[in-house]
Length: 210
Image 1 (cartoon, rainbow, N blue to C red):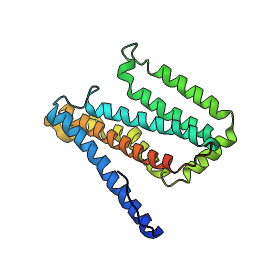
Image 2 (tube, rainbow, N blue to C red; image 1 turned 30 degrees about the vertical axis):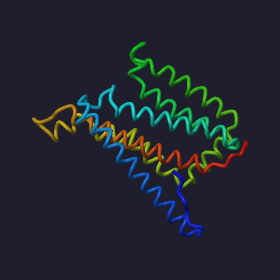
Image 3 (cartoon, rainbow, N blue to C red; image 1 turned 30 degrees about the horizontal axis):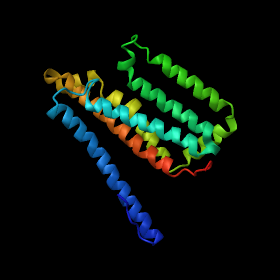
Image 4 (cartoon, rainbow, N blue to C red; image 1 turned 90 degrees about the vertical axis):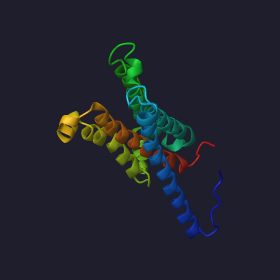
């Protein structure tokens, strides 16, 4: 659906921000809907084979692909974007650990290390451009929201979803599902915010090789 904005720059800016706000509401609502379907409709919880888990994988895959696209369109910051793409690809591989565990338990570490080393070596071929790309990234309006999303995924969801905490809160009424919903739901929220912010960043990039 195409959105028609006002010809006035001021009104156009306000309209664009309102649209962004509405999109963010829908993305967050999708998190709650996914968990609701897993628990109330499908009744299989939020384990490895759940809509919640699959949705997380789709979101981080989309983020990795978006930065792969950035490698293509923004030639000036290619080395930096390869490094970021590699980071999110490693996160995707970690999310797919149950798949790799069918080979050998903990096998996900090996493809993740391969991606990390390959992308790091490529980025190190031009340290100056990589650092300049990082500096530009930190000045972007979506940088802080990307960082917040990563903190939610990598830190807050893990700490807030600790079993010891929820055993102390629920005492005799503790069930593993409650703890899993908190942890996986928070993680899914983080992935949703990461996806939303990453797309905003990619959309703002100049097409320097076209």
